[in-house]
Length: 294
Image 1: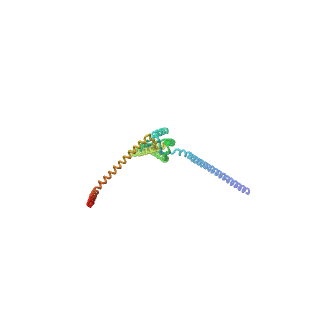
Image 2: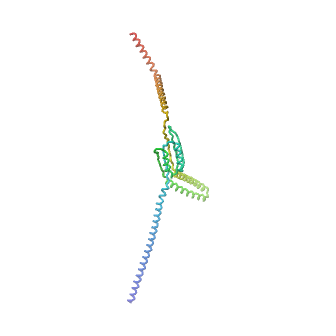
């Protein structure tokens, strides 16, 4: 009996030990599996971070490219003084042709024995500063120059986005138009299509204008001709005679002006001066008669 009891107790201890070892093994397996999943998750997160870092690095690499692709409209004003207006204009035209530019407007006029000229030209943006530097050398002295720029990159990007959205709406309307069966639907969709097409043309026109203004810079050039006049031999004698004639005429005109003003003054005051003169003559004659009698 005691032997049987001892065997039962030993068997129970063996079974309990085996169960506990299996439980420990299962728990360790679960922990390993969890750790493996955790490591895989961390690896995926690391990959995600790597991709985000790579995308951010790609963006950082693209930034200089975006900066170089900015659209800026340049305008310059240049005022120069030249000795010969015609020669200076010819040199500017040659310089403009060598820089692949063209003339928008050109004018020449004279005022107070001085010739003036103005030119409005457009040159490619890459040749903007070289053209200005060479145009300054045509004049003499220090030229007057001002440069202004307007960045339209943000507006152009906005126009591109709006154009893309309008084109998507247009494509959807065209698909609706193909499926429409009622006349009312056809008319409504056609009206919407025409309106969208008009807006698309306006956006394209504005983008084309900005492209042209940014690709070609505008330069307004003002020219003033300044010549040194040297008097010829004998020119001083003629000027002396002319000055004497002018002085004589001024003196004669002054005398005539004085007498004319005197006549006008006397004639205007004649209603007062005539009676006073008669009274003065009467008293003068009476005074003389008294003296003779005495």
